[in-house]
Image (cartoon, rainbow, N blue to C red):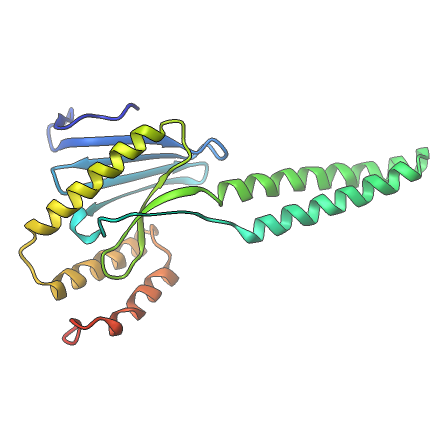
Length: 219
């Protein structure tokens, strides 16, 4: 899907799309589609081998300045290293004991460890993307995560700039105070938990930040 320009009318006529971005994680095959529509909303659709997750957000609950960083899945990295060492150890032993009987006994184990090493490496790559995240305005919860190291990097940069401008415009047009904006944000995060989009642990961490906010006394 190419990036769409401003004011593209969808077939069903129910909404107007300002811009859309399609991304694919080459390591896992996961597809991500981001669609800005009706001036102040974004739809996120993530499709992978374990299913599809789709949700929409009002841009006003997002912080306009994204964070770029790389996740490192240390669990899968350590698993990869462990299986590599085990494979090397079996291979070394087999190299110095090149007997038919030893070969027949160890060959299946070496094959298994090679497969486990490759599987762990794939999981590490899939769980360690280089991303640009837009987070919720007050609680700092990552809600929109774009893949940065992607073949369509330039399209991603254009989309990020569009997101920034749309978020600022949506925030400026919001006619409610900061406390009500916080309430709206927490309510939306709670819905995302119920929809299995957001991890409940992340949601609880977000609520724990509220007492440190000066304008939340009536919450």
